[in-house]
Figure 1 (cartoon, rainbow, N blue to C red):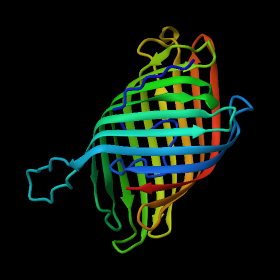
Figure 2: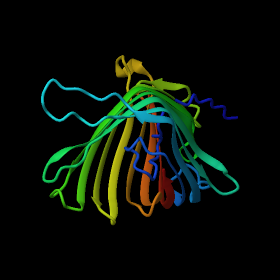
Figure 3: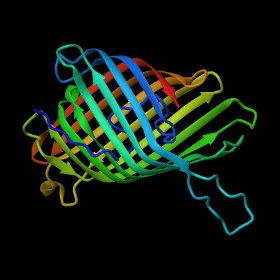
Length: 289
């Protein structure tokens, strides 16, 4: 019987991406999606899925303003978030029930937003998170349990507009995290696998006012060993790739049409790698608040 206890202190990034902008951590949101899944480890898992995404910060407020020893314009005051919690849940048909669930929490996070300037490639968002914990399970990929503690995670998103009045905005973002992870597979060969991982994410969007945006994102949390590969033992690696169309309509309503592939791999210098993958194609209706 699965027994998972997750201490919730961070923002969601499991092997799935939420419909709301996952790089905009000072937004609360909730959404439901219908998706079709395949490429799973067992023929019982493909089919129609119901998915829930959610993220909420218990306390929000302005951070401390930055000062510079010059007469230049000071940077924007960052937003400060305390106790951000998130969840990503997937239900299948009667035989599988809740088959994929991740929970997360971040103790403290900061985000600084910049106004994009026309005909210049410059930062539009900086994020910094401390004390992130996430954990859960993924039956379609054969992951009995997974837990991860990230000491720090930071990222920057750059943007480019054709001009100050242009409705078009192009963005590119990069994120990095450092922590420690524990993973258990259904396969008894890979049980009690633990290692430090480095997470990297790359995100790109093409946005137009009132038209919405096309986005693409690739994320990898790659485990490594501190000793030689021959003596380091087993390590885990998880990855997600997502492409879609996102738009926020009147007030809080959002729509996300997406295709997503997630994968998980266990490797050991003395064993055959255990690689699993799953694909989801679906639509999500949500609310940002």
